Length: 223
Ligand SMILES: [Zn+2]
Image 1: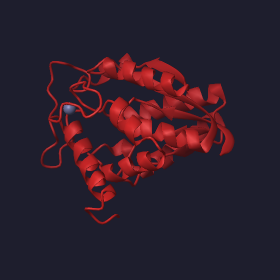
Image 2 (image 1 turned 90 degrees about the vertical axis):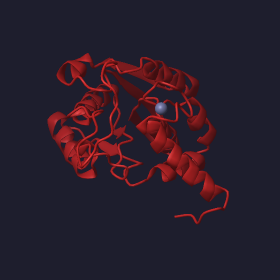
Image 3 (image 1 turned 45 degrees about the horizontal axis):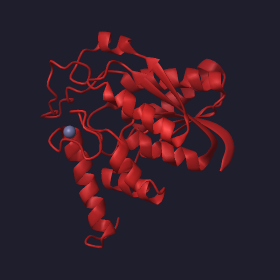
């Protein structure tokens, strides 16, 4: 374990909670930040708060309502239904530049709290068309943040090349499988744990979970 501080970009979902467990294994001190942009479900913020409290990590919540003002869409408005992207179009949960903004604000906070490491659960594998989830973007922003603040930040993306089943495996390896399964919120309909089972986020989570459980039970060959 490195005697260094890390800041985890944290939403209370499966991916960022797995990243939080990962960071706690890697670094001696860990803090978390959640961006409040008037998400479809306020429960997301409460969920993140509860997880941070239970794990005893400091939790910062930033007001990012600005994002909602910039890009009203299905994640931030109740009157717009969640629709999956078709024919190569972006899904309507897309907020342009969201990760650019989040990671930049995380960089400013990291600088203020003396954290050299920034951890984010972005992932290129189950890439649903978000350009600022891609590895090349994160590497590019890392350089920009370092130049802008004269810092030596390291942005970590432990999930970048994992599919959903592999993310479950990582949680399991970190001893966090049950915690992640029971306490995180991924569902667009705001239902904790296994969720509503119907929305795109639930379907993706469930598919990965079933795939991982089949591997764990020896019904399927591991990767
Ligand atoms: Zn759901």
